[in-house]
Length: 386
Image (tube, rainbow, N blue to C red; front, side, top):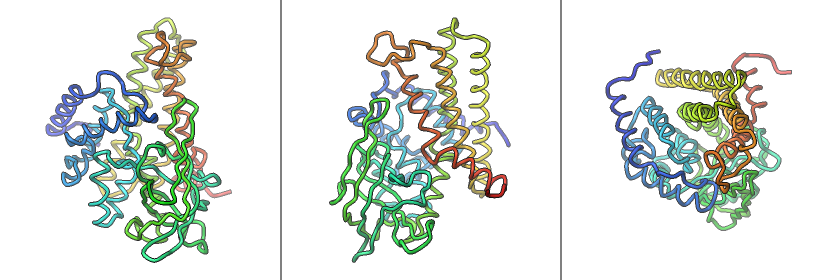
């Protein structure tokens, strides 16, 4: 694997770094999982879009720059290095869009990709249900055939930023007589449709962006079925490869997090003993290893290979690394870790505690790490089921 960047890639990095330095808000925006923060983040998404930095790897007809996967990784690295705002459009541009590019009709691409890139249409993921979380095939929400489309009934829960999103994509059972992994379809719908009810769900960190969504005879036209009727499981598995693997958690995120951790340790040298110094060194190594592993993955993808079940390894690694980074930060801070942003004595406006609380969800969302270890054991290592 060649780790040197070409002249054009270095030029791309320089241009992206200069633009981000000039345009990233001087003060951090409020959390995108609050109503006010979400609105401000949408304005930032529009700024990215207007300068074709919202979706750099998409074609120009969809608001992108036609950048390569290598250049996308470079942009992500520079984005997090600059301390740019979180991407509240991530469910759409990182999870749904790759599937629309692969499975979508021409009409779906023309209808949905540009508003998604601009941030005017925000997407929630409708997978989890009260009795079907990591066991995705156990969903009970159903869609019944009617003239011209489907009538959807049921409930989804833990929908990230669902309280603020305009649209939802998800799995629904369109043939209850088939086996669990069959008879599922991937549907897209506006959350303003008749029969949709969105209820916010409070989080441990005080943000209100989570939601549960109820469907009562919601009409979804045939044109909004993605990937074919009863073919939803295959589409969902392609989505999970993106969610657990390359696009949702790029290595730049963790390279930047470790850099901030090292800066924190330098500001608090009295708190750094030999054990914490070793722990900081280890997560630094882990972040670099994750970056190298991602470069290997991109090399395979450009050679025409798929990521497949190996994405589960990625998900285990980055989610548990994220927890460790924040645990170390809280140890460095000691009692100061408990101060929130309203306190004038809070370090980094209380960001480390907020980040820690969010990191705890990493081993749960996108399929619990217990499930991911089963997948790795069976599909990567070839171990027998017990």
